[in-house]
Image (cartoon, rainbow, N blue to C red; front, side):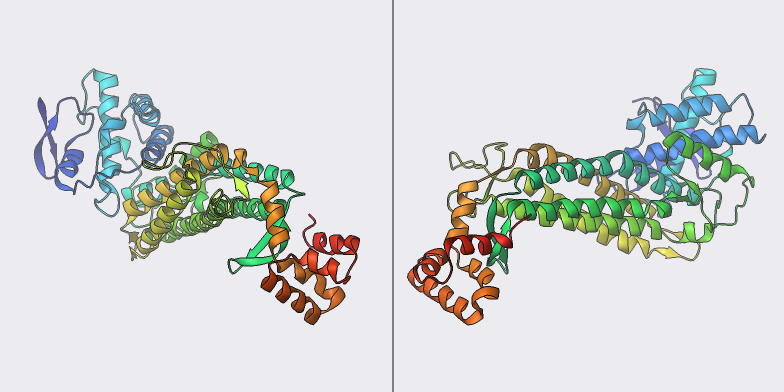
Length: 459
């Protein structure tokens, strides 16, 4: 590999000749742990979005030479478009402000802008990564802003549409299963009858509430730290810079971004990210309940509960022919567990706001954006490849209601608790159904019995 010499404040270092980045990025690549984890490209693109409009605004304010701004904006757009994805290989576990990644983006944009202007990759002339690309900014306000931008865009573009799709699928099943009476369960034991439609209505409402929760915290994610620079005072930035840049970002993304009301809170704390993670955790717990119920309801299918039938996705066993496992519910369960774990890391990261700066920003960015991404993917697949194709095992649902003694509860208001308990005891001891005993003893007519048994399970 051929190298070129690049110089930074620590001296000269060799940089690959075909690298758009420079010395600061190379030092980070050489010195940080190689965990195999890098910041999500959605985060890199959010940083590049800031750089693109920072160049435009700084040019408009007379702070950036007009001959440099177009090349910087073009280079930033190419980063947004994914042209230079391989240039961003810095480890997640880096300096806690994310300075290394901010400089990585600065250097790639400068290196590409210089190529546009001069034909030569990299370097610091005529476009300098700090003086020009990073003009009016600090890692300390850029990185928290990029976390919020990437998170809100991803929630709106990916997670909310996936949840809305799942909600529609569950509502369709609620309607489809309206008249199918089955046994309800509490404490994992037979309870009174419900309809399969009622059961699915609960799942549909959980997804509705998940959507509402995600939308309710958009206002806090919309506040951006940009403009605070090093410690929140706005040192070395124009008073109009942040407001103008953020307005352009809001216009392009159609997200309601605005400058933070208090830059000290926006940079020293990461409460918005912690709140967002908490909402994602709640969504994950809801999905875990839904996926687990569906897994159990389809269990067997011949020797388990078997009240619903899932679509066959793949052979589920390497040794048992014909066995098909509930693949998609298990995918959702694993993703939910990961999101819950990510929330623990983000919660700890949120406590890293000492004085004027949170120093666990890369950790927060990585885990928050991963949670959004994997939830969106899992929910989409769960809706499309599982929920849409669920069928009811109508005969089995009816047979379990007939076999259970739990429906005797419906008789209590008419015949009293003690008489109902005696009928239940006899059914349990003899193996006969509630219906058989009630009709044999002339406790109720068949019409009265049907009305009572169906009453509590009507949709």
